[in-house]
Length: 115
Image (cartoon, rainbow, N blue to C red):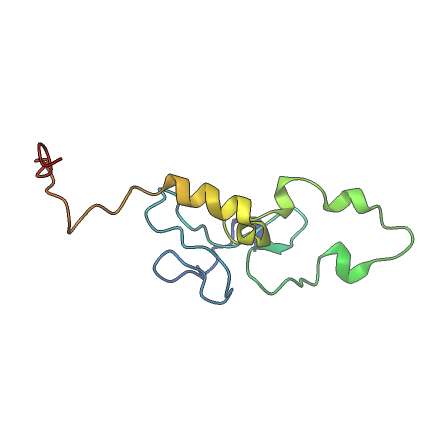
């Protein structure tokens, strides 16, 4: 079985990651939470278990080159601890459309001329 093409179950519920207490909601941002994936080293990325039998972290020795774990293939685009930072939460907030309803008519400015 080719694990690089293996389908992974999504961990999200209603565009959130409820297993991470401080994870932001992706709802209304236009970004979709992506499922975990298996990288070319056979390591599952984004499953929130943070351990994989094929991971260099599980087989670390003095001969292990830390550079083997660098690059985008080691970072999940949406299930990553980096989204919990203030800067990245603000980035998601800036992508959301303002919640105008139920206090705003969709096509008429009812406050026009009231000031």
